[in-house]
Each structure stands twice: as C-alpha cells, then as structure tokens.
Length: 73
Image (cartoon, rainbow, N blue to C red; front, top):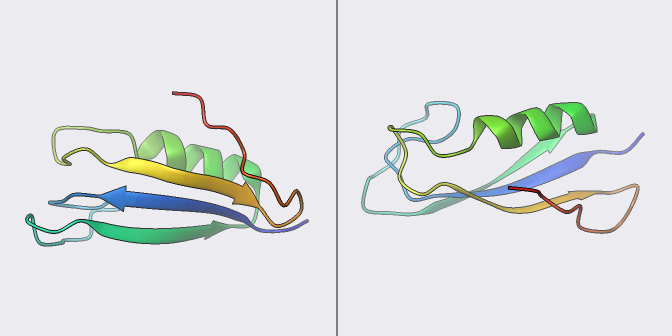
C-alpha cells in the first residue's frame, strides 16, 4: 500500500492540530498518511470551526493511484 497525501492551507490563527501560527499569514502544509481512512478522517477534522479562519484542503492524492482523489464537501 502506498502513502496518501493531503495538502492543506490555513489562514490562521491555528492549524488543524492546534499548532500556533501568525494570524496575518497563510501557511501551507503537506500531511502524509499510511492509509486512506486516516487521510479522510483528517479532512473531516480540518473543516472550519470557530478557532480557524477559512482552512482549505487544496489537494488529496495517493502515490498508488497517481491521480487526485475527489473531495466531496
């Protein structure tokens, strides 16, 4: 089984796992998962809530498939 990748953009003040970032800056992260279930669970967790301003999943793909996997919102 290959790895699954989730590209994530957050405009602050905190990322999906609570890490602190400057409120005035966007940051981009690449998260790597060993299975699709974990990657999809992260996507659900990364949805907007009161502590984050407009977080956005910008990509989701697998090295096995070589294609971007569609994200349903």
